[in-house]
Image (tube, rainbow, N blue to C red; front, top):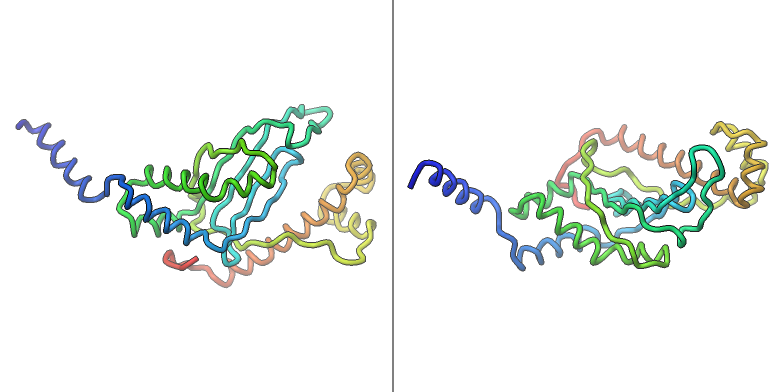
Length: 234
């Protein structure tokens, strides 16, 4: 046996020791782990761009554990009339799932598996168990994951804030005053948007309230919990 062949043999043996080869028992174990990890989670839908761009926060115990982004085709020009086609008339452009490294860290401590195969199983599991719920929100069945991504700039997700209901007895003028104070929209611009799309002012007002509340509680979380244990149970 020559040196090159011997090195290949040694490397193959070491890889086999470190990683389990794909098999039904391993796949079932990972699926069971994922079922438990996501058990009891809530999904919050946000429309980031009217009719064509959405994201879904998947939250458990008040914290985001994953996020799904769904984009449809948009024909709005850089300058000119906005594409007003409803979502159900648009084709799917991109669907991707983002997860956090804390989840991958926990899984690789339990399962001796290559990361690229683990990512493949996560993608398959999500399509089998979670994607249908999101498809129903759009009343369509043509969504499929393009890829799964792992956040590299932070290990865990931020605290989640459920949708904020409209405060009782708040007037249109009060909502406009709040928007004017917290954005660059003028009163005239708000009136034009509202005339073109009734409900626009209330929608933006609630979105701003939601953003402010999320910013507040996550700043408190960062101030009170500067360190994080990777083994925390979600």
